[in-house]
Image (cartoon, rainbow, N blue to C red; front, side, top):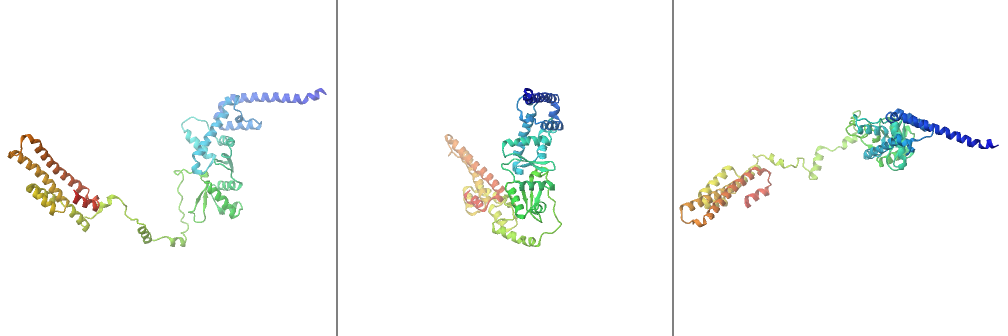
Length: 400
């Protein structure tokens, strides 16, 4: 009787000893093949399957031997990298990305020439499944045929939404249509449209209204290059059928477009300053502008008249000449005449006293300054005359 009473205790003791022996052997095996487990993805997967068969989870042990082995750290670091990839591509794919695309991006980020651990889809799947502890923000969606999607947005997808994703994956085209869902899933039009509208509202799919038959719903998370613009080939034009007659008749004509632009105050010619350079000098407008500016001959003639006849010639030219060239020529000639008469008076008469000689030099310098400034102003105006508006040209004539 005493032996029968102790039998469960003996069985428990023997089982504990066997588990201890197995633990020691498993630790020895893991220690012996530590490098192989970390480097070889296939060997690591077989080791994980063996541990799962006996109910041992290396990722659940943060202390002791498994922590020294570093298996848990590998998957934890991989989980962090998965989160980084999901956040970086969230604005593109709406929060859904395939494990294959995550693996491609991680390998590309680590570099081809660098020595790094091999990453398999199984490693990513195990690491992604551990993200469930963060809540409903991260989850793994099986799509069938060994394909998985990682959802990185709050909330869970319903069975209908998952079925739509699975249908897009099974087609291999990354898009579905309402008729495809109704035909393959035996749904009603309202059910299919409701599911597509929800996915479109959440940003998980894009709508394509350019199809000739019906609207298509594309899933960027299923794109081969994950919506990278350089990797997606441009769509091929479909010339199988011409556009409907109603569409062709509704297209506006050229006259209607030009009339609408004129009503909106738009012009067909570009509004750039260089357009003023295209004025024809032989046209009446060009003659008016040239008449207001004058010519170099007018400038030199007015310069000589003001220089020879002094202030009398300057006043006559300012009263009877209506060109920029003549007025600036008269001004420059008057300045040089002022310097000339200053030298004549200073050296040929006794009116200039030696005590005030600085005043005569100042008057002569003032005359030369007027002459040089008038010449420079005329050259600047002549160079930029075509770029000036009519009001600016008139101001140059009457106020300078």
